[in-house]
Image (cartoon, rainbow, N blue to C red; front, side, top):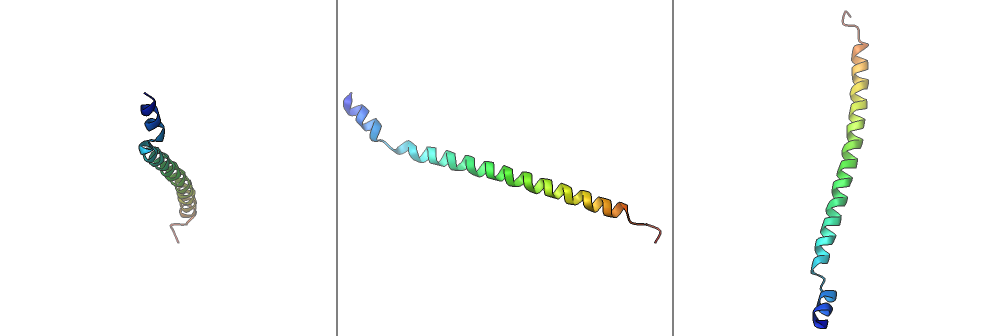
Length: 60
């Protein structure tokens, strides 16, 4: 039983999986943050373009 506990304590096979999960979660969160920032900027720019087009006089 002591040999089993010692082998379990020294086993590092699962560490790579944990690292992969943490890195993947970080990439997903970063992607969501960038997507939100780009979406907000694009919406603001679209509203400015709409206002500029609305201000144009079609008769001229």
